[in-house]
Image 1: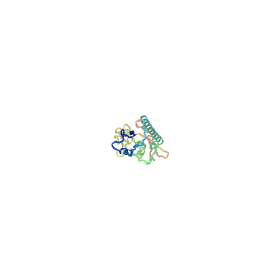
Image 2 (image 1 turned 60 degrees about the horizontal axis):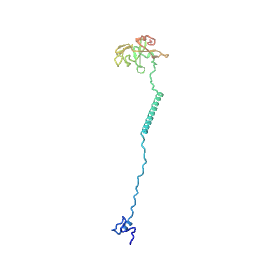
Image 3 (image 1 turned 180 degrees about the horizontal axis):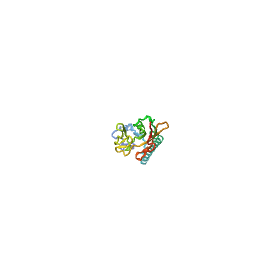
Image 4 (image 1 turned 90 degrees about the vertical axis):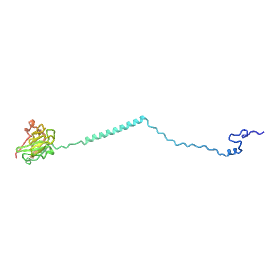
Length: 213
């Protein structure tokens, strides 16, 4: 009696074919498949997104720095204005206007109109100085030699040689400035002192300079 071995016909292994005598050889010679090794991709470090509070805090800091920078720039600008203030260069209010003999009798001298804003008028008995500011709205009239009057180009006010208003909307005569003699004999004009005809000031000392020569 044959004892059943590990490989008996009665109970063949599951991988042997009883009908194929070479199945055991084929199974023994067949290579065992190797298990494939899975290659995992390199791990990427995770970056944490900023939280809502962090984003808000960062925005507040940036806004604060922007405001600080703007404030510092404004402060520097103000300090610069104090260090370099705007200076308005105006002609002196008191100035010499030459010798009396340089002026023509019965004539209006316009040489100081642009530079000092005055007309100097010489009469046979002396001098007076008129302001070039129209008493209506402050425009500058022109002396018209042919018409013997000052005519304002803005609204048509007219003044005769003495400064009295005779036409247009000007409510009062032109103002006069103080005129005296300087130590060297020149005419000395002082625009700090004004004389108004409607207040009776044209008869005051300085409103008219006596001179016969």
